[in-house]
Image (spheres, rainbow, N blue to C red):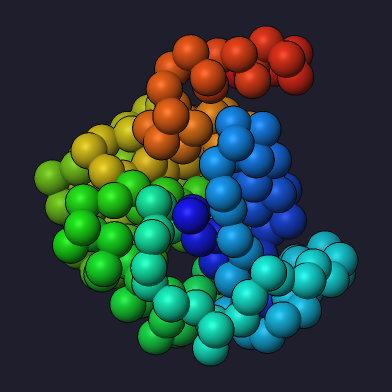
Length: 180
């Protein structure tokens, strides 16, 4: 199962597009509401999470996904459950994926040191020790980072590629007519 963490004021498309891409690939994804069962996106849309942070158990996890948005990213970073999930994923060499402002959470933990990474413009300084990449979506080892909402489908497909394979990601890209 892939856990997609949601906190109040998250960027809706940065969560829902990757969720859609992974679901199309047949990957089990659970949304985890860090700030409650109903999480409100930065645009004001309420989303009902599959489980709350209190119900989250780190078992059978395949990857961790952090959408951006502000102050959603700060709400994720302040969650002990999110911090523990990142630590356990890193220790198990599982993919940790973050988009927009959310790579700053990984940077603050020192996890991107020596890794190629990207983030929303203005958050680069928070990627402590990372080799800043020009690409919009960057995979380096078990870390997948992306710049923002404009590349959220490409971000989701990069996660599919990492968890399944390139052929599956390409088939989904073609089926949705994505030029990315």
